[in-house]
Image (tube, rainbow, N blue to C red; front, side, top):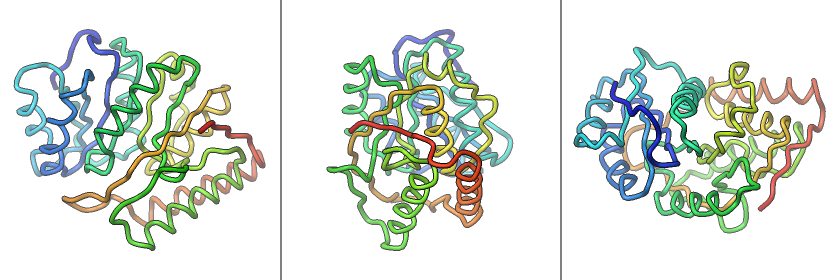
Length: 250
């Protein structure tokens, strides 16, 4: 693992990886053009993803790598990244996919808006607000995502249209107010739980449209287990506290 002692840039982009050797070779050089640092949380990829990320850094200290011994899940990867970033003084912590589905041009716009919006605690890059869209998805995949978000919105309440979105910027001081140790979801259910918890502590949430493009390399990590986890947890949360208010602005 390589690391910096404290934050130089204000933004830390956290990128969980598992077998993303091809994708990171396209993504990371683009990210390095922005005034951000990068944290790779790699789950023991056998395709040398972690080593390739270190090589792409070229000794600049801007691409940091945490390696885990096995595939341990998206939620725990982000929680590890949050802890790492909060401990080093970053003001904004960004979630971003490794597979190229999230566009660096959109990240630049999200960063600009976050920097100009001190009243926003969580900024979500949304596929399902006006102006957002998905590219190269099958109709089944799109319907699944729309259904998951609709179902979550009905049971949990509020106005967030893309609760499963994985393209986000959190203010560090806001994350400090949340009890992250009690977050236990994995898969895209992690994003739903984080949205729900953000509302619980009075977070101010803003959704901005993005263009989500299906990956060029590798395989999707979506599975029936991930879908079932989300359905079960959202149903249970809805039974416990029906129609919880999860608010957003757009």
